[in-house]
Amino acid sequence: MEDRTQQEQASPEVRRRIQESFDRQGLMTHLGARLAHIGPGRVHILLPARPEVTQQHGYVHAGATSAIADSAGGYAALTLLPEDSDVLTVEYKINLLAPAAGDLVEAVGTVLKSGRTLTVCRLEAYGVHGDGERKLVANGQQTLIRVNRPAG
Amino acid sequence: MEDRTQQEQASPEVRRRIQESFDRQGLMTHLGARLAHIGPGRVHILLPARPEVTQQHGYVHAGATSAIADSAGGYAALTLLPEDSDVLTVEYKINLLAPAAGDLVEAVGTVLKSGRTLTVCRLEAYGVHGDGERKLVANGQQTLIRVNRPAG
Amino acid sequence: MEDRTQQEQASPEVRRRIQESFDRQGLMTHLGARLAHIGPGRVHILLPARPEVTQQHGYVHAGATSAIADSAGGYAALTLLPEDSDVLTVEYKINLLAPAAGDLVEAVGTVLKSGRTLTVCRLEAYGVHGDGERKLVANGQQTLIRVNRPAG
Amino acid sequence: MEDRTQQEQASPEVRRRIQESFDRQGLMTHLGARLAHIGPGRVHILLPARPEVTQQHGYVHAGATSAIADSAGGYAALTLLPEDSDVLTVEYKINLLAPAAGDLVEAVGTVLKSGRTLTVCRLEAYGVHGDGERKLVANGQQTLIRVNRPAG
Image 1 (cartoon, helix red, strand yellow):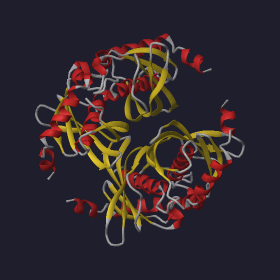
Image 2 (cartoon, rainbow over the protein chains, first blue to last red):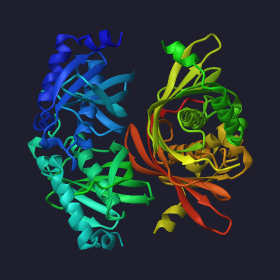
Image 3 (tube, rainbow over the protein chains, first blue to last red):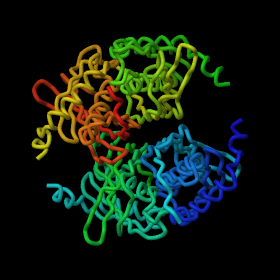
Image 4 (cartoon, chains in turn blue, green, cyan, orange):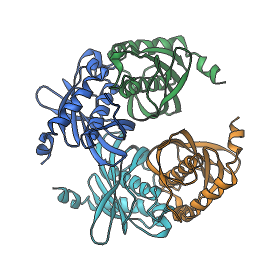
């Protein structure tokens, strides 16, 4: 059931819109993050571990983990909103549960409640090893507000 | 009063220890962030605005703002702990109050309570313009846990 | 699967210990709350709706909902800790998703990560109607710290 | 400076409106809480310590402290909004810094940012002893949304 949901794709139009927005985020490119899945109400973003995204002990920095989790939640919200919408993060809270070890970090944003003005998302981040081991390293909650998308 | 506090410096030993830790954070270097002030219980970090740290509308990305705020709080905590200490972020919550416009973002971490095991910090981020205008763009709260510093 | 987990009971010793602690919480009694389920890593608390627990529009007050959610998380943490343990709430964050309408509010605390010092829980609250309708009205996340239980 | 701000009163009309709303909150009456100060962008609520509001060790329950802090923030937001407004708590996060010891708990809600749709408040709670000792026991942050006040 979980797997089916994860594999359900948003419409091509929604995926294109989100990929274009993502590509305009200088930070995501600079960190080396990429969109891995865009489903209705759920978005996954991957961040390969490399020295440019670490903290002082060599693990992926909480700030980098949070950045991709925040973006994953924002885009998950966007999948459920009308086409002329954009979202801004109002706030989020994140618990760092374990060092973000592994070959990459996978952030998952899932919509808990999609309202007319506000959306609330669950944020999760997993440390993923090459051998397939996958461990929850961060868990959070995010509030977003819908705004009209600037033209052009 | 505010100004005096901001300008009070931590001891040279504490400042050296924090600068060394900061320099080992690949993410801080990669983002272009730098330590601007290390006082007892208060640390400031600056992040110049440039395309590599933006979101889709050209403002500094909430993830980048959060990353330097998280680091500022962590180092503020460290200024008040014994020399063999390190800290890990347990969790933080941040409200994004306004678009992070300006020439740079300044994050300020301030210790609210320094306990034996846990430290709680206030996090603030300001958008700073070349003409000196300074606007609060994010406000948060962070919990950290003290751990023993891994030997050299 | 969900149902099986919800019905799994903690040991009689754990349930007795938690019930006794709950009974010493003057606030829980004063609000009219009661323990509904004590499973390993999961506790449910019920709060019947009545005028004494409302806000200005007649729904159950966010403060009452939060109070039982906080307690549910604390006791969920306790089910997984050694017998001489007690827990203190370090912090929690809660989103109020909808007015807490219904005949009672059911709070569910679920352990996400149980560490030696810190425990992180998910908090949920549902508005439950007499006809069985059940709606998520609040969702949150909580950090707790283990302390040694005072003797006696 | 701090004192001057604390003593500045909101207009009689605003104070009357807030007092009436407060009096309709069954929970506040049931807990024994009372409005102590209504200033522009800042509201104080007092809660006398008594067995009905305690946790298992006899201190004021985090849930009771949070409930008055949440209300203080909500009313602080309301002081700055048009007359036909009401507010709902979107979310809040609170750190419990120390046991809420003392003869009463004083919650202070202060507006950090008042927007057209959303308001962000700082929440503080102090344990106050009869001899005047006053200690910060909780610190938090809250997001509220403006809604039109139901007629009547």
